[in-house]
Image (cartoon, rainbow, N blue to C red; front, side, top):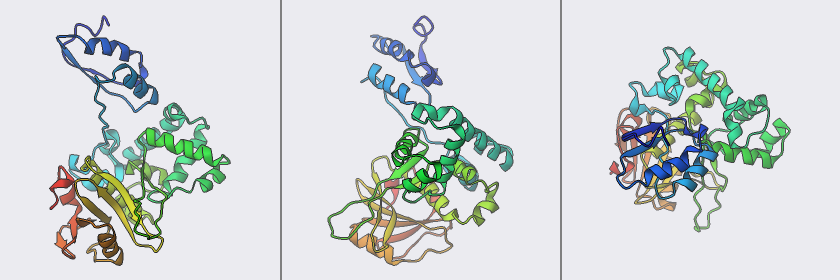
Length: 321
């Protein structure tokens, strides 16, 4: 209190998760009549910090989730895809330095940080857990397979997956449910949110040529593009859609409009049977096919191909016609 009460303007407190006892003090300072200071509190999404902030500062705090740097923040979007959005990784002098930083960060997660989110396994086992998870990136998680490989229970795997979501390391995309009578896949798809960490966990992606040769390059690109769409879609709820017959849509946004997104790492995407089915069955306002090329063109009145570089130039998905 003595250190903070006389400060004015915007006061920045970093690494607040290490001092959750500050929140009751901030409540007193926030309730002053003249409001001489606004507090910008930074830190990881620690469960204890979030609990303390919600209990101590109810009605006084706005929580903002900050993603990593994105391709719109950098001169080279391909470097962001390879290295991810952590500043020290993205801004490293060389790809080798970037990879070294990401490997060190993953060791820190395994040895210390993930303990806050319920991980009680040895660090080496947590590293293996993350590695197994990385090879299921973009698909449904096979908890039984991971449990068998690590000799732990499936319930433990699911608990740790919840912890990784809370730590903002993975994203689960829920399936879209309808009553149209079609049999739908109902298992969520899971993505590592930072492609740089994904590539470090794969273990053999030191540079861009290696990434392009990797057999799972398509799933990496898909997760990267989905993350960029979701950065611009705060007013939408995201889903994926897949029928038992094989028709699928990588991303469905439901909100002010219903928009579909298919991600293709191809030179010139063409209209597919899945795109036709998704447009009709989901009653989409429009379906956008995102690809790494430069030309924007229509496949039908309801399906358009959009270059990735034009996607990242948008502030909001609502800007799409």
